[in-house]
Image (tube, rainbow, N blue to C red; front, side, top):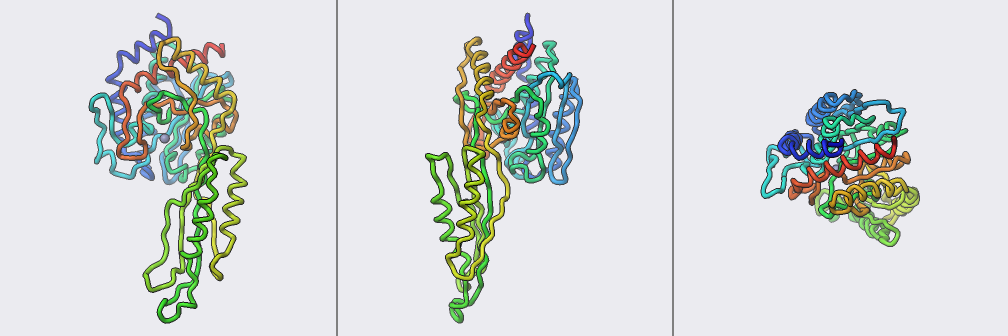
Length: 387
Ligand SMILES: [Zn+2]
């Protein structure tokens, strides 16, 4: 039996072990801002990696779990990165409310798809290849605050720094039922606009008032008009709050927006367009402020991504599996930061399913094993091409 056959056999004979690791991960409450759960996930993954010969480094933060860096072998030689996030989009208590369950070949639970299934695949693939005797040089990067766009850390910089010198990277994010693999993702810029007017009694002294809501209403229309699908960008004014009572001119209004774009080069221009709208005064006496809150860079479709996809396609063809096509994904991921460093990257390598970020989230159980084998095939081919 060659290395690939041995690793495939490991997957075939360890379905229960893989599912129980998946279940263990989903049961850990690593929702947004739940540092303890993030730490628990990190410790679980670090423990598995150590058994596979990885040494562990950590970056620690005040408000989220550690970033886990696992390293094995001589990293002065070409090596792949396996990466993922350990947090989920849900808030504390969700795994208790909706525990991991499997029904008719479909798995449910918070983060089952996004992306604890993928975390489980990454670690299982490393285990299978280790058992098959292929302990290749490799780095693993796992972060604990991807869902809130790293608002608790400087993980984007860490990923960029840690990916210097890597040959390629695989992010085990949410996979899709059509089996396609992400080679490009749009970026996301989140910002808040505040308008500051002057409150007044609308019966006694209406002319004294300066409506912060009126000002914002104009800005909403201008900002939403920036959407241009032909140019690959669209903006959403998603959350708004302002005013106090019906009989007072609103002195304050606040709005959170999300701008999606297709090229990192677009961002300065988009920021300029929004700033212009923020600076424009519609209601005399109202002032406005723009603050960037969070975001994701674009995962640029660098040429190496397509080369990697070709390898994935070769593996699928050879094995008689559905051949994955290239996907442009609207949502952001940490693949942006490896691509930014020029490291060819495939994303969406995780379990396949739908409706991530909602309580309807599900993942196909069979894809846990199919995707593990695909990753094994790709890693072995990448290894062959390196040696
Ligand atoms: Zn995710």
